[in-house]
Length: 491
Image 1 (tube, rainbow, N blue to C red):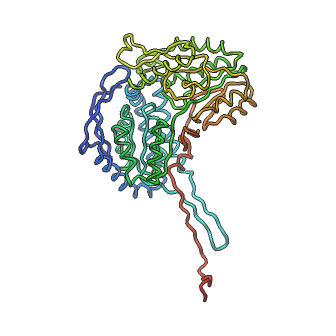
Image 2: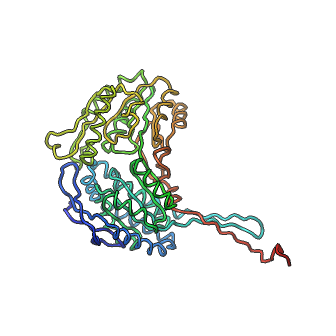
């Protein structure tokens, strides 16, 4: 297993090509500061070329047999599994995520392609018989050319969540990974270039403020799918509205994780730690607000502090590492600033709160796992998405009180509760305003379970067969077998 420094072109019409007039950016390993590669910064002319390739490929791809698209998706899954270790290694180098996590991401995307290969085989159109002589056909057809934009926190996983259903539905794709983490998607394009027909999948790299902005404004784009921050999602939503183009948005979160007194305590505490430390807390559905019943508050805090102080932080490619590095200096400074905000608001720092600067961490962006206690739900650290390994722990007294606090947020992506009372669990799950809710679990998102939020967390669903609907539009065909004129205008 080895990855060598290289320079990537743009992947357009089935091959890597040099930019027409763009330049290059260095791609860094956030754990070591090493330069991993150079990637092209696409220009306006490059974007037009990629969209044109998808536009001309769409006519053939959209009428391709379902069985053929299914076969291609299964071939992609096979290639991903055959390169599992390599892709997970590249992802760990590029993103700073522990390889124990990136291995699971790669496995999940292989499953994703297999899942949608099967899902389109059972998709059916609809026929409604109005009467003896009239019927209506309702058919699903692809949009055509889909623009997709993915963030840096799950580069491979979220790319697969978008690519698989869009291809299954018969769309052609122009996709832009984050400028920070393009390598795993570029490697997937390289590995599948002889499997996916030319022009069907195109990968553009570069800054979102340039490439992404120009891409979504192209008049040949028929659908936009974006995953990222709520602020950027609003900007893209406004652009899509002006273009009158449908859009799916998977945005930020500030998810509530609730521990009741009758919780399976050891699992709940371990789950609470994983809910915020997985992915270094750079996860949209992170359990960043932990609500703990006042009767067990001190006990839970004490046990969480022990876990946070002992978690194995290290090089992401070390299989024993459980927490890697943050993505870059900008993100590190943002997270550290929230530590200052929390202290200024009067929250009590239990542990962490600093960047780790001693060797061998001094060349990367490693953060101490951090816990704040004495937090009020109204504080900024409890309301704003930090996107780092900072857990705020809030006490509550009653079920009604914690539901009210959980819903007192602009976000509505995920949530969880820990209790052995199934009636309580279902009451809370139904009452908390989210698109996703776990009971006695956190972060588990197997293929076939819809993922997406409400409120400022966006709209649309991924990771489920309904994602095919996100990439399909309905056409109604009315059929009359009666050849007699009605006489409306006379005989």
